[in-house]
Length: 137
Image (cartoon, rainbow, N blue to C red):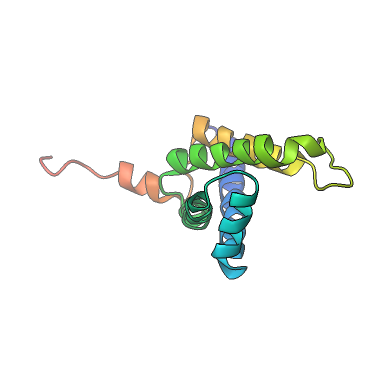
């Protein structure tokens, strides 16, 4: 991959990882039971809040170090798609008096999809694992 493209992908991966790590951490710090209650109030199963928070928290960390980038990225893209369709779409792109819009969520989803499609190897655990030679060589 072109070095400039790889540097760009590294930046996207680390920033996306930090963003989701902080969002996941906030769900736990604010009381994950509160988040589960909010999920229930919008018609989603409360237990889904735990899954989302864990994927955001752990997924954010593993993105930062570049482990399982493609798998984590598609999970995060699906979370953003759910957030847009279930919560944000009615507020419009830029938001309304009822709440924030879906523009930020859309950008996070786009970055996650990019990383899913292209991956990133610069400064990643994935690249170190793929460089290993089989034991029988």
